[in-house]
Image: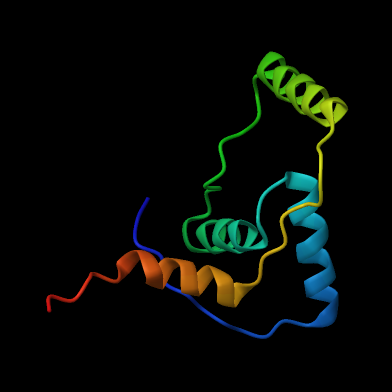
Length: 98
């Protein structure tokens, strides 16, 4: 994967709702939806490969249903942006020589 650059921008509330819906429907992040839209606009070609293998798609859905039926124990993991930054920074720190 190529180097990522963090961007922040404002969108209309309607666009926000559409973005959330697309993300949930496609099962990808909102950022991925935006990256795909930029690629389509710039090149006229979708960066997402077409879903043409129906058997593969059915296999994925079966796997998801199996995992969902297994359930999970405990509370789901909750994270926040600051925790993610702190974790990444802690990995990049090197011990100082005394």
